[in-house]
Image 1 (cartoon, rainbow, N blue to C red):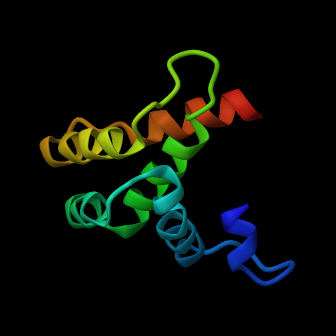
Image 2: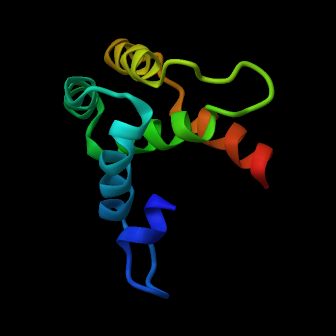
Length: 99
């Protein structure tokens, strides 16, 4: 919904669209701006945005839902800092679940 709200009808999604959607959904997820800033500093705006969107999508998954998106974003940020974040794996798992 946040992705669709920010783009023009029929246009292709851009990195900017994903970043803006992630920033827009932070308050609804209960994620502090400082957690976003830390994530964006550690991994860049687009990867941080993708993390936020993955967290949002995983709030209601049937097994191991994300109860604390802010805490999970901070954990993902720490993993990005130490080189152990597997964002590709998270995106693939999400695609398999919804696809």
